[in-house]
Amino acid sequence: MPHAQSQFLKMTTVPVGRLISSLAVPTIISMLVTSIYNMADTYFVSQIGTSASGAVGVVFSLMAIIQAVGFTIGMGAGTWISRLLGARLLDEARSVASSAYYLSLLLGGAVAVGGLGAIDPLMRLLGATDTILPYAKEYASYILYAAPIMAASFLLNNILRAEGRAQFAMIGITAGGILNIFLDPLFIFTFRLGIAGAAIATALSQCVSFSLLLSGFLTHRTQTSLHVRYVAKAPALYGQIVKNGLPSFCRQGLASVAAIATNLSAAVYGDAAVAALSIVGKVFMVAFSVVIGVGQGYQPVLGYNYGAGNFDRVRGAFLFTFKTATALMVLCALGGWFGAPAIMTWFIASDPQVIAIGTGTLRAMGLAMPLVPLMVVCNMSFQSIGKSWTSLLLSSMRQGFIFLPLIVLLPRFFGLPGLQVAQPVADVCTFLVCLPFARHFFDDLKRREGGV
Image 1 (tube, rainbow, N blue to C red):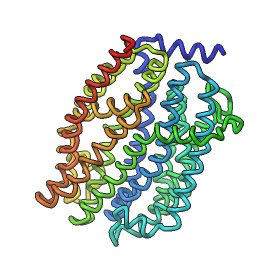
Image 2 (cartoon, one colour):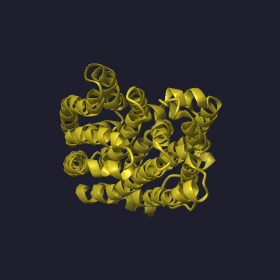
Image 3 (cartoon, helix red, strand yellow):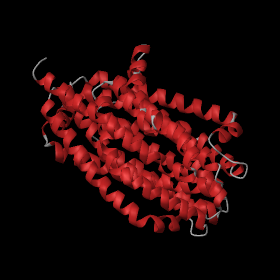
Image 4 (cartoon, one colour):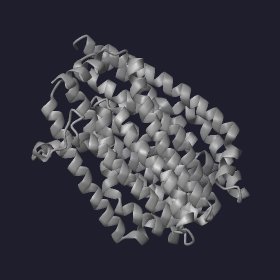
């Protein structure tokens, strides 16, 4: 198959720096647009009031759960597909892609049914206060209706990137994100739908993204397929997809749990604290999306070359990704430190308390930003080569084993400042944990090169 052969040659012969950059730039653009339209939701909804702004932070946890489902299946299938394509096992790659697609729709539907059936206790669990609850319920209901489409979109995005089709994935994601930015003010203010308008805009935009991503498979512009004839009947294949994706589920799921824990801790200090930390979380995601974007450009390169036995290219890809991501995070940290008051004022100029809390939190997080790339690259490396349990352990650190105890203990001893520094302290600890794992990764490559 000429198309498959040319793609294989591209992924295994083009210099790794140029190749990763060509795949990372579209992914970074996609993630930045996603982060920007998340911030657009926060910005437009904040014009309604502080409680409405807090509701966006609460429902963001729900969206993280849906994203966790999509990314679990998407990354579990995608990392496997990259290795299969690198080993030139095309039919097996098509079976993994098709099976994962229908699984994502099924699990997304389960989230929708469960969430709509228990929306009141769910919003309480996610951190909604009495004043935030009505806004959160209204916003969340529309998001839940779109949950199957959202989960499937994350899956399709990951498969396209696994094939090295990052530009096509970018088109689908950015088109929906840009549409969302324009629909927000239209539905919220022009149609006077309030916070429901923001949710409807997000749901419609997700449907547009899904349609564009799906079109690549329906028009046969991909190496893999979503045809039902490729769907596997053996439970073992689905188990392997889930196992491969567990680190992503853990990472996304713990991000949601961390957001819930943050909302609950912040609620002690009032709606202003909830709103401030919600805004800071969205702003930080812009910087974090740059690192994730570089890492997701790295993963298919790693998968292809690991599957093909090109371990020297794997080593070069790791080092290039780590250095590039660290340099970008240093720039983001400087921008966040000096621009923190202006950033917070842009979101909600009418509440000085929100601005003050948010400024201190954003500056504290900026101090640890340059340490985040090592954790991301290590986690993605082990996941891409099929070492799921190691990746699962690493993905559980930053917002799980380390952060969750800190978010409970630090506010208890230091009050609001303890809440503000919980995440950067967790980032420092995670960096130290990842150092020996990075060394182990390189030692393993050396053993494989020597045939040991």
